[in-house]
Length: 369
Image (cartoon, rainbow, N blue to C red; front, side, top):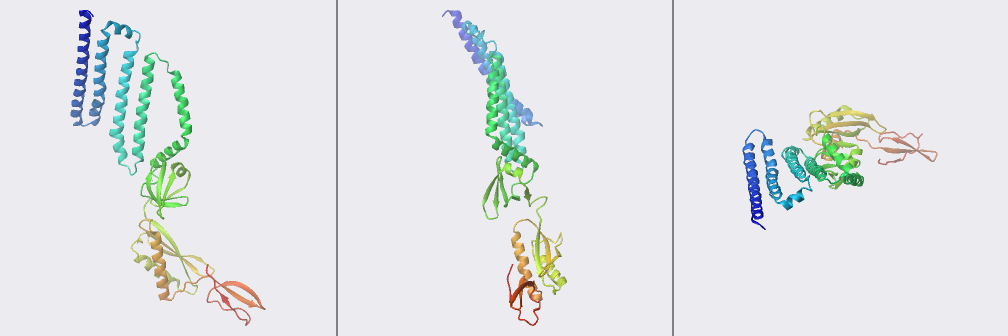
C-alpha cells in the first residue's frame, strides 16, 4: 500500500472518530437543552429535544462513517451501485425520531390521564396504543426505506394484508371482548366497586380487564364474564345514578285489625333502624285485599344496596313482636272442610270464619303456603 492510500485511510479514520465525537457532543447538548426546557412552561419542548437528541447524534456518526468510506476508491465504487442508501438511512433516522416522539407523547400525556380513572383498563388501552403506533410507524418506515433501495415491496404488502386478515379472523372473539371492554369503559355503565346484576349473577365488580369483567357474588364466588357477553346482556347497576336504594316488604293483617294502628307501628319500626333513610320518607300502603288478609306494602330507602337482607330481617322481626304486643293478628292461609252428608268440600277461610254446615260437625285442617 503506497503512502497516499495510507494517508487516505488515516484521514478516513480521523473523520470517523471526529464524527462519533461530534455525535456524542450533539447528543449531550440536546440532553442539556432538554433539562433547561423542562423548567419552562411547556413539557413538550424538553420532550422533543430528548427525542431528537439520540437520532441526531447517531445520524452525525453515520454520516461521518459514510463520508469516510466514500473517500476510499474501492468502497466508493460499491456505493455507486447503491444510490438509495443515503436516502434509506435518512428515512430510517426520521422513522426513529417519529416513533420515539409518538411513544414519548403517549407516555407523557396518555398514561397520566389514564391513571386518573377508576379502572386500569384505560392504562392497558394506552399501552396497546403505544405499542401499536410504534410498530405501525416502523413498518411504514422500513417499507419506504426498502423502496428507496430499489426493493419491490408490493408482494410483501399483499402477504402482510392476508396475514393480518387471518389474524383478525382467528382473534375475532378476543377483538370483540376488547372492543366491548373499551365501549363499557367509555360509557361508564359500571365501575370497580359497583354492585351489578348480570343474568343470575349479583355481585360487586372487582376488576374490568380488556377481555373480561370479574365480579364477586354475595356467596363469595368469583365470576368472570366475557365483555362481549356484557355487551349483549341487560346490566342492572344498583349503585347508579346514586347508591341509595329502595326495599319493598309486605305484611298481612287480619280484616278486623286496626289498619291505621298497624301503619303507625310500621312507620315507627322504620324510623328506628339506622340504615333506613328519613328522606325519602318510608311509606306504608295498602297493597291489596287478599283472600286471607289485608296486605300492607312497606317501602323504605337505605343508604347503600348492600345487606338488604339484614334490614328486612329487622323489620319483619320487629313487626312480629310489636303486632303481637298490640294484639294485631297476622293471619295465615288455611282451608276449612265442611261435611255434607259424608262428602268433604273444601273452601278457603280465615281462622275466625264460623262453621257453615246445617248443624254438621266442621273439622278444620290447616296448611301453610
